[in-house]
Image (cartoon, rainbow, N blue to C red; front, top):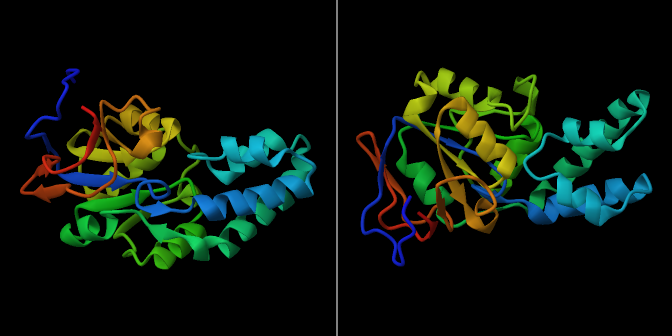
Length: 225
C-alpha cells in the first residue's frame, strides 16, 4: 500500500468469504477480560497488569500454560479463568458497524474465528446483540491457537472457500499472523490493528460492504492503506 496523505476514494478487495475475529473486531469485551483476568491473577499472586497485557488474541489454555509452571495445576487454573470470563461476559457490547455488516451478509459467506472457548464466544455475541455465526471456530475446535493458521483454515473449509478467497478481520498481531499464514487477505481493525502487519487497517466495521464477490472499503474510516 502506498503512503498517501489522503485515503483512496475506492478500495475494493475481491473475496468470497469474510472471516471475523470476535473480541476487538465484532465485540468490545475489554472490561470483562480485564475484570476476569485481573481477579485470576490476584488469586495466584501474579501482577494483574502484566497478565492482562498478554492475553489478547491468545487462547486461555495457552496463557495458562505460560503462567502456571506446574502442569498438574493447569486444568484447575484453566477452568477457573474460563468460568470467570463467562461470568463477566454480560458487560460485552457490539463494536460500531458490526451488526449492520453481519446482518447484510448472506449466511453462507461469513464465519467467526476466536481464541475464546465456545460457551464464552456465544455468551459475548449474545450479550452484544449480534447474530450467532453460521460457522463458529473456537479454541475448542483447534489443536493450535493463533498465530497458527488452523482456525482460519477450518473456517474457510467449512464455508467451502479457498483461504486465498477470504478476508480476515483482526485486531491482534497473533490473529493477523494466523490469517496471513492461512493465505487470506488480512484487514486490521481499530488502534490495536495498527500494531499488526495488516496492510489495510480500518477504525471499525462502519462503511464496509460486500456485494457480488467484492468487499468495498470505500466508505470506511481507514487508519492505514
